[in-house]
Length: 113
Image (tube, rainbow, N blue to C red; front, side, top):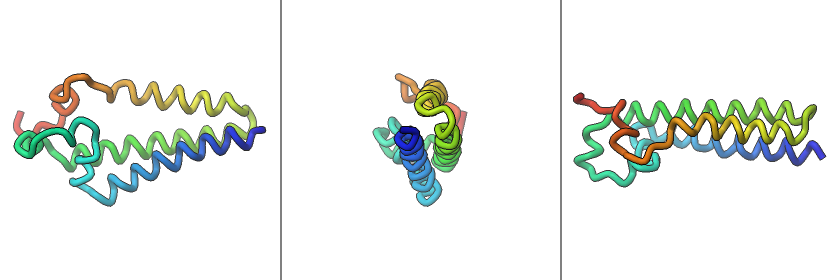
Protein backbone atom coordinates (compact mmCIF):
# COMPACT_ATOMS: atom_id res chain seq x y z
CA UNK A 1 0.00 0.00 0.00
CA UNK A 2 2.93 2.35 0.62
CA UNK A 3 3.69 2.26 -3.11
CA UNK A 4 0.74 4.49 -3.90
CA UNK A 5 1.84 7.11 -1.35
CA UNK A 6 5.38 7.01 -2.70
CA UNK A 7 4.02 7.36 -6.23
CA UNK A 8 1.92 10.35 -5.15
CA UNK A 9 4.95 12.13 -3.71
CA UNK A 10 7.09 11.27 -6.73
CA UNK A 11 4.38 12.59 -9.04
CA UNK A 12 4.38 15.91 -7.24
CA UNK A 13 8.19 15.97 -7.39
CA UNK A 14 8.06 15.39 -11.15
CA UNK A 15 5.64 18.29 -11.61
CA UNK A 16 7.72 20.67 -9.49
CA UNK A 17 11.04 19.67 -11.06
CA UNK A 18 9.44 19.97 -14.50
CA UNK A 19 8.42 23.53 -13.68
CA UNK A 20 11.92 24.25 -12.35
CA UNK A 21 13.42 23.00 -15.61
CA UNK A 22 11.05 25.24 -17.54
CA UNK A 23 12.22 28.30 -15.59
CA UNK A 24 15.87 27.25 -15.96
CA UNK A 25 15.62 26.79 -19.73
CA UNK A 26 13.54 29.89 -20.45
CA UNK A 27 15.64 32.19 -18.21
CA UNK A 28 14.12 35.71 -18.44
CA UNK A 29 11.23 34.54 -20.61
CA UNK A 30 10.28 32.13 -17.84
CA UNK A 31 8.70 35.06 -16.00
CA UNK A 32 5.93 34.99 -18.60
CA UNK A 33 4.79 31.66 -17.13
CA UNK A 34 4.15 33.18 -13.70
CA UNK A 35 0.48 33.62 -12.97
CA UNK A 36 -0.43 37.29 -12.88
CA UNK A 37 2.74 38.43 -14.62
CA UNK A 38 1.62 36.89 -17.90
CA UNK A 39 -1.50 39.10 -17.91
CA UNK A 40 0.43 42.38 -17.74
CA UNK A 41 1.00 44.55 -20.77
CA UNK A 42 4.49 44.81 -22.20
CA UNK A 43 4.92 48.32 -20.77
CA UNK A 44 3.98 47.03 -17.30
CA UNK A 45 6.30 44.02 -17.64
CA UNK A 46 9.19 46.32 -18.57
CA UNK A 47 9.10 47.81 -15.05
CA UNK A 48 10.06 44.49 -13.47
CA UNK A 49 13.22 42.39 -13.39
CA UNK A 50 12.15 39.34 -15.36
CA UNK A 51 15.38 37.46 -14.64
CA UNK A 52 14.88 37.84 -10.87
CA UNK A 53 11.29 36.62 -11.13
CA UNK A 54 12.39 33.59 -13.11
CA UNK A 55 15.25 32.81 -10.69
CA UNK A 56 12.88 33.09 -7.72
CA UNK A 57 10.38 30.65 -9.19
CA UNK A 58 13.18 28.31 -10.30
CA UNK A 59 14.43 28.03 -6.72
CA UNK A 60 10.87 27.89 -5.38
CA UNK A 61 9.89 24.98 -7.64
CA UNK A 62 13.18 23.20 -6.91
CA UNK A 63 12.51 23.50 -3.16
CA UNK A 64 9.01 22.07 -3.54
CA UNK A 65 10.44 19.22 -5.63
CA UNK A 66 13.03 18.47 -2.98
CA UNK A 67 10.36 18.43 -0.27
CA UNK A 68 8.35 15.99 -2.39
CA UNK A 69 11.37 13.70 -2.84
CA UNK A 70 12.01 13.72 0.89
CA UNK A 71 8.38 12.86 1.56
CA UNK A 72 8.56 10.05 -1.02
CA UNK A 73 11.46 8.55 0.91
CA UNK A 74 9.56 8.93 4.18
CA UNK A 75 6.44 7.35 2.68
CA UNK A 76 8.19 3.99 2.75
CA UNK A 77 8.01 4.06 6.55
CA UNK A 78 5.09 6.30 7.48
CA UNK A 79 2.75 5.73 4.53
CA UNK A 80 0.03 8.21 3.75
CA UNK A 81 1.26 10.57 6.46
CA UNK A 82 4.19 11.46 4.20
CA UNK A 83 1.86 12.43 1.35
CA UNK A 84 -0.27 14.42 3.78
CA UNK A 85 2.85 16.17 5.09
CA UNK A 86 3.96 16.85 1.52
CA UNK A 87 0.67 18.50 0.67
CA UNK A 88 0.60 20.47 3.93
CA UNK A 89 4.18 21.71 3.48
CA UNK A 90 3.50 22.64 -0.14
CA UNK A 91 0.40 24.62 0.81
CA UNK A 92 2.20 26.31 3.71
CA UNK A 93 5.11 27.26 1.46
CA UNK A 94 2.79 28.50 -1.32
CA UNK A 95 0.60 30.65 0.94
CA UNK A 96 3.04 33.61 1.11
CA UNK A 97 3.27 33.57 -2.71
CA UNK A 98 -0.46 34.19 -3.19
CA UNK A 99 -1.56 37.79 -3.69
CA UNK A 100 -4.80 39.37 -4.83
CA UNK A 101 -3.08 42.53 -6.06
CA UNK A 102 -0.53 41.91 -8.81
CA UNK A 103 1.38 45.10 -7.94
CA UNK A 104 1.95 43.83 -4.41
CA UNK A 105 2.93 40.42 -5.76
CA UNK A 106 5.73 41.81 -7.92
CA UNK A 107 6.77 44.93 -5.99
CA UNK A 108 10.06 43.36 -4.85
CA UNK A 109 11.05 42.94 -8.51
CA UNK A 110 10.59 46.60 -9.52
CA UNK A 111 13.58 47.88 -11.45
CA UNK A 112 13.18 51.55 -10.52
CA UNK A 113 11.70 51.93 -7.06
